[in-house]
Length: 443
Image 1: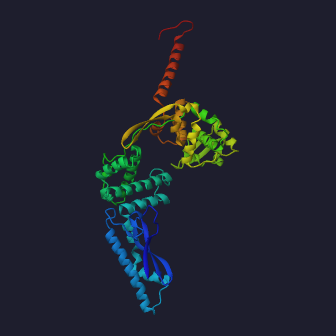
Image 2 (image 1 turned 90 degrees about the horizontal axis):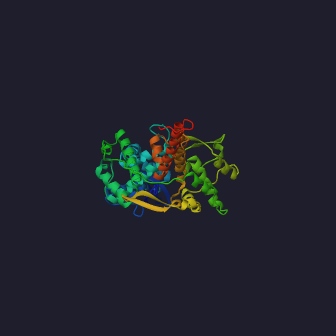
């Protein structure tokens, strides 16, 4: 009789059930236990919990596994002793073990696991994925990107817990945690301020929900210094001349680059994120107006299609160009933009890395990505002054003027040129008003 322990989901990022693999008399079957553990705390080779500061209950946990193995073995031989040395069938043995381990307490154990920090965190993610945890204002299921951001937070917190050798529980989310985690993300992981700010925001969401449900009374996360920091970083956009050069640039018959170029141009005139752009279908167009339910927000936008977009659809026989992965798209897009003369000029962009301000100077085409198309649409329409901001937002999907104004990107020189043009028009109007016919009057 052999008893071995395994995880049901060894590669998942959530608490996993442990099962015992029982081998006897040419028979093998699984018996799921009440014990659960996170895969990060499990040693697959020794079939035990890892020892160390990260999982403080490892010794007690491993002792319970040892006792479980002993109870399973005893139950097996007790059955044989009372049944003329016959081995129980898997069905009978399961019933015996259910009595031994009192599986009726499963619901109670699950509740206890869920009340821990990591158990609650996983339950929150599960609720998000299932759609039972809705958006607080829209009462709609949360977007996939939101769920992924919480999974990303869990991964970073797990990594920080291991790095710092400091257990993360509800009560340890304090200012020491805040400073330690932000320092770790800045200096070790070398991510930018805005990414850290999003992780802190996710932590505050998690803690607020736990507080509201009575899982903790810790309110340190509401402290004014426990804040989601952010910083303005530079990003480029392409003006109408640059977009037109991309649209007509000679790609030497390279069909792969043509598809990337054409899909990018569609993005420049529709303001769609690549997650939406890559899934466009022709059946969502009616009277030259495209209807798109945005993947990120779940909101529906209606976009009038301009002539360049309709020409691209006609070019591909009435459909949109095929898409590829975003990573490959950005790689090929730079090959396209490298051929454009207007994008050879050098530009300098400000960013932050490892807590330091960095100025990067490169040819403009090196900074072009799929998201540049969306930013270009917003900025070009704003600078054109033909549409009201509310009309542009109806297409981009920005909820407020504040979020929109943070999004558009125009250089100080372009702003100055725009002001100079307005001044010229103002002076021309004044001159016209001052001219009462053939004579010039002072104003």
